Length: 252
Image 1 (cartoon, rainbow, N blue to C red):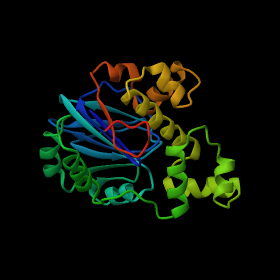
Image 2 (image 1 turned 60 degrees about the horizontal axis):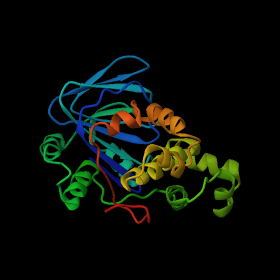
Image 3 (image 1 turned 90 degrees about the vertical axis):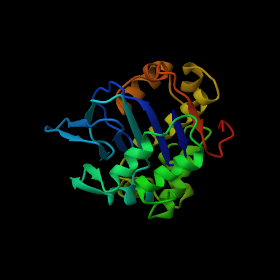
């Protein structure tokens, strides 16, 4: 099951055989029934039940149990900033051992497609320590929302102009505020649109078009690089996507 909101996405389901990848946004991983191991490509490993991996950190995650949960948070958002303070060990790029780990594991074991949405959002609030997504700089909030809602490809220059900034100033501000690049976050926004199309019952060809990918193979390549598996491999698990945002394409 995937629940999708602006600023958040939550996967709960079987453990996936993930290959090395580098996310566009922050990812909190939870080993629901057993520990998992995070292998940064720079070396070393971390065996834990909960971890928060920063965007643009190339790593591989190996599960030893049957069920995992992944919470994706817009980098630099209030969710992300608050969530970082909830971990007790690790370093800047990969944090571990959430201070409410026992409660989160108990609740995570109960999440399914039948779970009422308020219970799902309550779990997220416990995980992040925060109830809403926002950014320290309101211009970043406006920019990320425009990207998620855009009905056409949105280059940096016109968005910078909307905010009264030069393109170079906007790109620096965006990176400082989110910890990731505009290009990487725009790719995340494209994934949102593709997911909405899948939730509406469309195939990968339509999802690729709706997400402004050049082709289904472009979507597959970008998805694999970001999540460590192909969209077809994920969909083969019998995935259900529930969109919980104001998009006209959303299924609720």
